[in-house]
Amino acid sequence: VAVTGVPVRDAATVMLVRDGAAGLEVFMVRRSLRLVFAGGAHVFPGGAVEAVDENLEAWSVGRTDADASATLGLARGGLAFWVAAVRECFEEAGFLLAVDADGDLVRLDAPATAERFSQHRRAVASAQSTLAEVCAAEGLRLAVDGMHYVSRWITPEGAPRRFDTRFFVCAAPERQTPLHDASETIAHEWVRPSDMLHRYTGGAVDLMLPTQRSLQWLQERDSASAVLEAASGAAPEGRYQRG
Image (cartoon, rainbow, N blue to C red; front, side):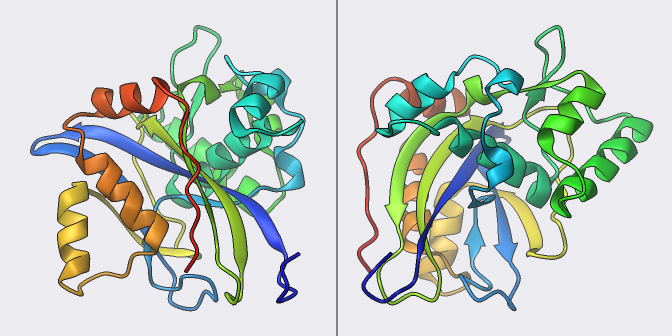
């Protein structure tokens, strides 16, 4: 707990990247104007780590809690950050980073499948179901192996909400269509990092410092594969938001 008395909550954010017609693109949502924390800002999907994100190693592919914790410099519980990123991405954007028994990313392009998973999404978002229950029902496991840890940001003291956020990057799943949740987020788009930064400098959008820095990091790469290689090739440096 900070001196101000505002607790610092663990959180996770994921940058979904793809190769667009004009180059690298990243998926972003706009937060609802009514939210206390970063209302109206353009962000990557993410949110607080919850109790339901813990102890899901059995439902995760290619990354143990020990591995995840070591990557984040924690004694235990690190995998929950990856799981939280998957859950928030599903809740806020409609993307599900999960694989079937053959190891293929789940396809949600068939109308009946899309509707079924929309119901799953609403149930998870309203805490009527969990990712583990969705995986059990659909024969899936969470594709945490393709999500790479990039950076860490801590909200400065004095903010109404404070988070210790781990940023991840992942290739966007194909055969899935994004849809913002219309509750915490009010819009979504695929955008080139340089274009979003240009809009920010022109005053057209609001970006928090961690988002700005992450976009600057992304724009140094020209493809999704280059981003993933950069993220997986070396241990990330911790970055802290001091205000």
